[in-house]
Image 1 (cartoon, rainbow, N blue to C red):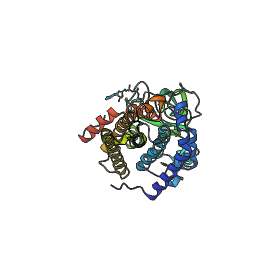
Image 2: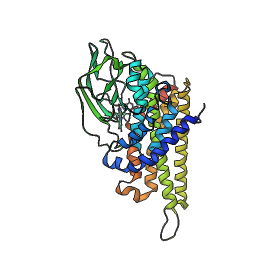
Image 3: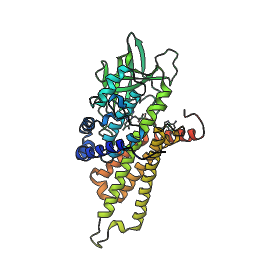
Amino acid sequence: MKRNPSPALQALLAKTTELVDAVVAPMAGEVDREARWPAHSMQAFARAGLTGLQVPQRLGGHGQGLLALATLTEAIARVCPSSALCFGMHCVGTAVIAAKATPLQEERYLRPIAQGRHLTTLALSESGTGAHFYLPETNLTAAGDRYLVNGTKQFITNGSHADSYVLSTRASSPDAEAGDFSCLIVDADTPRTEWLAQWDGFGMRGNSSRGLRLDDAPVPITHLLGEDGDQVWYVFEVVAPYFLMAMAGTYLGVAQSALDAAGEHLRNRRYAHSGAALRDVEVLQTRYAGMWTAVEKTRALIYEAAARGDAADPHALPFILACKADAGDTAVQLANDAMTICGGAAYRDNSRVAQMLRDARASHVMSPTTDLLKLWTGRSLLGLPLL
Ligand SMILES: Cc1cc2nc3c(=O)[nH]c(=O)nc-3n(C[C@H](O)[C@H](O)[C@H](O)COP(=O)(O)OP(=O)(O)OC[C@H]3O[C@@H](n4cnc5c(N)ncnc54)[C@H](O)[C@@H]3O)c2cc1C
């Protein structure tokens, strides 16, 4: 598989890194402390055209795929994981819209996204079905030229800040079974929608992952994505690969920043009584080597998965399923190791390393969760249906 980034992707990465240093980094601490949605990051990405990452080139976007998504989210998450997640969920929502967009949806959503004028995001999860995000209970009823949507979504990243929400519902057909679902785009100003409590998360505190209640909310029929009941195609062909790659990149970025923090402390910490540096302690040298190896193995798996996915390799599925679970495990393990290596200073005062551990923990509960992904990876390797 070809894994080297194209010149176009290298240019996008250079632009992202520039913005991360100039705009994202100075506010990263405040985003976590104040649980502040990172408007500054999203505006900078939009102005630079980066929010059009997944929009086809013929509509003014970059037409990039999975490798670009993983690479850019990693670069952002090294400094501000919430910004990476907010950017990543916008890109996943964009990819879902782009997959089967009608000419009207292209003009209404994809062109404005490419121009940095529209932010979208994904609203799948519900408290009733929890981690089983592919079983929505929100329903829609056809009423003339619109659907009336009823239900409550939870944990919508970018909640109340996006311009539109890619929402899953049960299919409208009367003989639809549980799991037959549709995707439709709900505009932010849709009547009879209500945002629930503010996000006050343990980690990923800038996410604004909020609940949204829809009570006979009218959504034009033209906002349906694909065909009514297109569920399996959307979940496994678009939502899963893009979501998993955005998350894998984000948690790889967290793991890399934990490695960086540990290395910095090992190099700089010296004892007053002996003048010895912490990096001279053999057990810590060994621990640090293990951390570095874990990051590099995870990065190799993610790039392999992304390259296979972008090349439509028929054997890509287990790679793609495994990489978010692996990135989550690596991020939590490395943040934990960095907490040990960085000692009391990291434990005190809710340090940056402590934030890494809190942010990393989100990986295990964001669905498909780590346990579900390991199960699905095994099933796909054994030739069994995932569900
Ligand atoms: C920071 C953050 C951001 C999020 N952003 C979004 C978003 O933008 N859009 C969105 O739609 N959702 C989002 N979510 C929601 C997320 O994807 C999950 O749907 C949600 O966290 C599931 O929570 P739950 O408490 O209902 O899990 P539960 O369903 O109660 O599951 C609890 C645990 O049980 C495990 N479990 C359940 N069934 C099985 C099984 N059969 N085998 C093995 N293990 C199992 C799960 O893996 C999980 O670890 C976000 C969540 C977080 C924390």
